[in-house]
Length: 415
Image 1 (cartoon, rainbow, N blue to C red):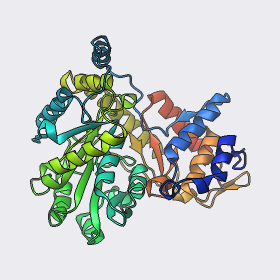
Image 2: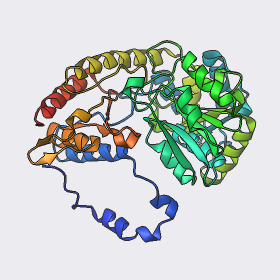
Image 3: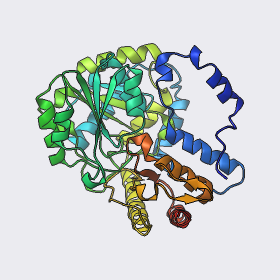
């Protein structure tokens, strides 16, 4: 049975009946489909159904021990008070040293702002620079929150699509064609959520050459998956001198160090952006959690061996899920070069039916896989790619094998 769309919990009914009381900016936002699918899978699990969740973009590893020990020490040393809005100087210094050592980039501690996760870091920048009617270029497939953040700032998301035939990466020509006098920012995510695509240094050079001709465009470079890549050293668009002063790097500890719940992200940016984000953050969250900051400091200054152990595990899982996905009829699959997502093209199943239910979209297909196969994925429409579905392989080899077996058998029911 498919979940009824009419059986809404009381809070949902109340929400629907009071939409007119909410602000227009909130009503313009779309709910997060990734969180919605995760919630639905958890509801099925709670009812006793064995669901394999491939919808969550979260490492399944535990935070490394030396980082946890640093947090315990911070508690014992009474790091329990407000920190500076931009974060402790020691953490910002550790980030500066990380950027120099790992990325060859020169920043000072006063060019860093630490926030409650990289998500807040991105939103801070967008809210600080985008005015009503300003355009923000976002390559698709995109992370679900980018367009919604732009809408929250009353800006206009300008979507530039790149399909699987382009390995989900836009070209300099596409970028140039999308730029108008109202373009305020360009959002880049490499390695990518949801596709795992990674822009090479030469591909970034091509984008940088276009953007250097438009110095009033701010580049927001989301590099949160930096350390989960399978092609060698990470390349940042900020490494090109021609665009360094218009680039904001966004990063954090969530993915590389299995610290999603610690909520520490940062920007490394020109002073004018840093001052703006500091001013904004000072008014609505202040500095991030003091204990989490000390844990993040240990992450950046301590051993990096756990990062490589996790990266190797993800690469093994990437190879496993790609091989299994290629065995599924009508799936079109590429080889992700980073992150921990597979984004197969699945539109060949649209129009097919089972048990009176017709698959009309990737969202339908994802719901079908959840309810009939008990595997949670996310429809690609949420990511600006309606012909695809996203699968996270941040789970065990055993779960991947069983999930792909269920998916293959469930899709075989469609005629």
